[in-house]
Image (tube, rainbow, N blue to C red):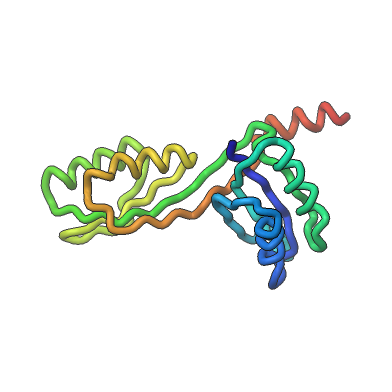
Length: 169
């Protein structure tokens, strides 16, 4: 089963390498990884999607929590949360029926056309990874030249945070 883990780590050279090294040394696979600065530029949020049972995820969280310059590690998937991924897809398609079909798909999936030429289009889609996968699958009959995906970013829902605070209080 896939799990999303959020790690708040110091925004310093080598910190991401230490986290990835921990996963590698223990044989944990990283499905996706996404890192970016937080509101405080001294810290970065690292969102990792991995797979394993609850015991494996608990072990990952404990191991990451022990790393120096890691402030917080949490399993986002344990509580209600919002996940998003973005993909840019380069498709070969000339003006005509094929282009109209793609435009209809873009509209249905609430995507965007971010670049266009006489023979190609670059499409942007964002949402849950399953939505992104489905959109890409719908484009398979066309000539897909390239796909670039961001990896998952996630945050717990506000209602989940309020419930957690009430349970602790």
